[in-house]
Image (cartoon, rainbow, N blue to C red; front, top):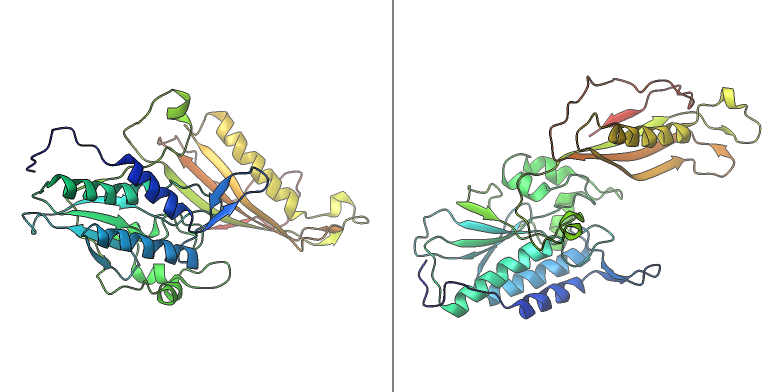
Length: 328
């Protein structure tokens, strides 16, 4: 890299902040309970499409050559003096969960664009190209597989698999790419970059609790997402004796308690376990649930000493008549 400027280069923090706040207004909502303003920009919704178009416009204004691949991943490229050299890749995602803030993913994308603006303003030329990436459905909330766009780009998952995923309304990812206009022509398989760097907010409170302003990632969480269906038997809530019930709702509750017990036991390393979705059927006040559907998210930064897996949960006060099924 050649530079006529000082060794220490700073981006325009105010400009970056304005970009973050502008993007946060796309899909914004006001939470009445907390009084906070949040973001709901699930992957490939109209809000996400609008956010993508805004980001592409900023990329083009910064002089980046933009391409969109068949997964909807977006790349903005700043050429180097050696265009054959593998690029330095930075970026993240702009899709969100349903109750998000302004920074998750977006800081990595808009921070990358801000770096390019700063290099241009300083007249700095790099030997390697720089690319800013925006990956599709990294949250995994809508189509059920997290880090999806980057997984397909890296070859870990196939494009056909990703295109065939559906949301809870039965809409496929492939159809939503076409509907929003982001079924791009570029090849989805990404050649390995020279390096990848991403600026990301801390999603846990560890740095904040310790008064540390910035940290360097030394590892990633191992994550297992499970969708579990527990089958019981519907019965009248007022007249069916307890010993004759097969209560799917109670069984689901015991799964939740069991997950917490696994965490508290210390036998599974630094395990975190969460049930973020739970529904019962037929969902009526005076009916014993015949079916319960729940998700579990287990995450750990370490490799825990997992015991041998059980094929079924132990019989308990829930009086399970049919073991719960679990699927990825």
